Length: 231
Image (cartoon, rainbow, N blue to C red; front, side):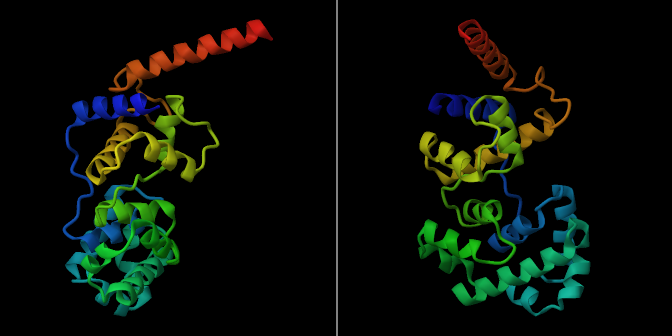
């Protein structure tokens, strides 16, 4: 497993280079983006983020004070805008209570403790919390999303019913505990899934992981043949 993950990382990094993810001007903007990107394309998040910036609202104190209906209208391009506007307010309240709005003060807290606190914020699930931890706070945490699961499943690394925690522990136990590398690994997987490992009509022949996928299929076919012979 360790060698497979390492090979996937090396092949993708050679193909894409340093992706420099997450694109944001501040840790708080990363937090906002992590909430807004739920169930929507990044292009829509960018529009909503730009709307907030144009109105001078990329600040937890200002988001906490702005009317929730007005906020919903501003972030409308990101979809699910009513729920997400409430989540942004909850995140902003959390920051005020936890660190007086100064995100730098969160750095002294243990990662596991901070993760639990983030998960207690309404509207923040594991993927959003982990995105905040690694991308906004530089913690060595791996983000699991639909793209990650799709690639790992197709390469025989996880079963179809694998939970978030199972996938995350697989990476934690078999990949360097390095925030920058975990950041890059997740970004590489997202880019690969978007361009090649698509949900429908995957482009395996063009994918930088295509040869690995082919070998995995051959292994699976051999295992299936042995089982059928023994059965």
